[in-house]
Amino acid sequence: MSAEPAVTVVVVPRERFSAAARCLDALLERTPEPHRLVVVDGRSPPAVAAHLRARAAERGFTLVREERYLSPNEARNLGARGVRTEYIAFVDNDCLVQPGWLGPLLAAADASGASAAAPLILHGEPEHGIVHAAGGEVSAETVGDLGVDRTHHGFLQPVASVALPGEAFATECLEFHCMLVRTSALRAVGGLDEGLMSISEHIDLSLRLRARGGTLLVVPEARVAYLEPADLAGSDLGYFLLRWSDDWARRSVARFHATWGKGPDARTQLRWVRRQRMLVLRRFGDFLPHKLETRGMRWVERVWSRTEWPLNRAWVRLAGQHREARP
Image 1 (tube, one colour):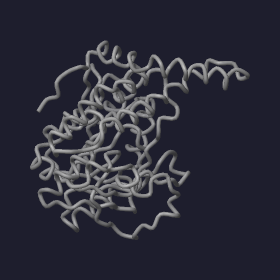
Image 2: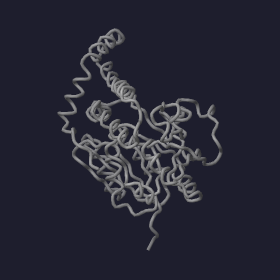
Image 3: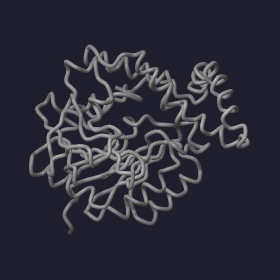
Image 4: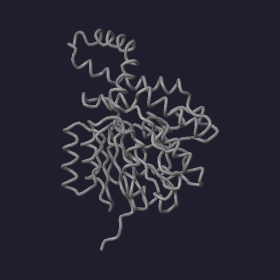
């Protein structure tokens, strides 16, 4: 009988579905290490759902589907339920793992006893060589005054310009695009907080692990690319608008403050999620004649700025997602 693999890879939806097939196929191709695989699917569109079912039947991994949209932490908890391996590697469904991504993470965690480890996260297509996150800074004293430059070291800088050690190094904060977590450490902190529905969930887990004496590592040898949503499909919009809704952001901020006594400023977070939702405007440009694209988009932006917030509230109610988070 073969030995139990050391890791279960759990793939979850982050903010859209249109990259899910490409990213899953890359993960299957580029992960030769012995592992178990769980893919969590929260109401993906029919074409994506069919692809996931076909791959699950072909490769024998576990597919967990819910007929509603899931917050990332809710999806992660679903995927981690019943896992018996020593580690869980959480991977978002819009992340393109690079060859050799998993082995160095496992080796670094084994050698150091770390509670969690993350690869170097790239921003956009991997060949662009742009950093999204290489660890970050966070503490219970500074959570009220954090910016992306502190929680995402090297953010949007070329890899060549970021001073990175050649080996794994300790950090205070890891990103959830891809994170290897020791299963016992995750269970010791009570799993992931589903009250954090859209923001600050990586900060919360980093603080919880470190509060119990855990260490966090960045492993530059391992690399994963976060594919930013520059090409939202029409079938992405429902989940995307809910994921970055004011409702989910407000409740996430309130939960973080209730847990830590302070946290990110609510107004700053709302401005951020509203800017994120502006990405859907790119869809309108596809329907405008080329000569009218610039002028037409300016008109669309003016209309959008006046109507988007109430429309977003209406969409949250229509999607049936206004629920109390499970403890």
